[in-house]
Amino acid sequence: MATSITVTNPITDLEFTTMDTNAASNEVILTLVKIELTPSQLKSRLTVGVVKGSQITDVDTSLVKTNTKAVPSTLDISVYHADILYLAKIKQRQAVMQQQLNEITALVEVAQHNLMIKNNLILTNARIVAKTDKGVSDAMDVLDLKYFTHTAAGVGIVHAIVEAGVITLSGINPKKPFTNMEKPILSILNVGGNIANAIRVNGFTSAILPKEWVNIVVTNLSTMDPGGFEVFMK
Image 1 (cartoon, rainbow, N blue to C red):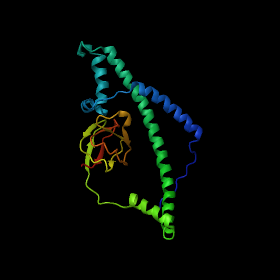
Image 2 (cartoon, rainbow, N blue to C red; image 1 turned 30 degrees about the horizontal axis):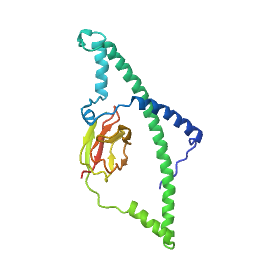
Image 3 (cartoon, rainbow, N blue to C red; image 1 turned 135 degrees about the vertical axis):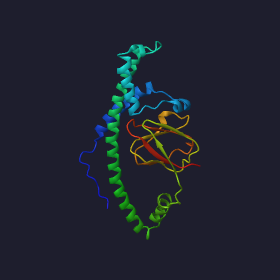
Image 4 (cartoon, rainbow, N blue to C red; image 1 turned 135 degrees about the horizontal axis):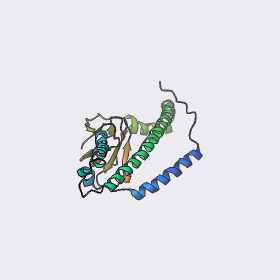
């Protein structure tokens, strides 16, 4: 039987306000530099995982810095090195935000766990009370229909996605859950949609996508680990 997990230091309202202020400051900056990718750009974007990331470093060390004749005359080395520094700064912030996301996700999961235990106690008691109380009985009928009546499960299609990979799918059934089957966080966006509306699905969790999202772009946000997911087609 599941037991509650003790939360010794819950976040205070003042601390929530501080977090909101910091998040708002970050969002102001990110909004200014946001890049809206077209479906064509999303499909043709080069993916850079661990190996290719190492390749960039080695090319810079072995060729650009020490054998400049290897560099095309059309490529400005100072701009190239500025690009490398810019990427390093972005990745540094990404790592911090990713760590913070992991930490707050753990807090969310504990809070949901504790609340679900209480939720189950309420449901158990409600089923007893429903035998003699019509209001509770009617409410339980609605809840049972929504959450506890299951249709036969269909067969989904499982896709693998490489580190930092991008996959475009057409004709999915958004009424069925999108299931992240591996550890990396996946980002889902409808083709042609605003990237600000992308939905993140944590590892080993599921999400129901908006009903109009029939054609989607799936991105593996991890540059370290390959991922996998299951979708249902129409």
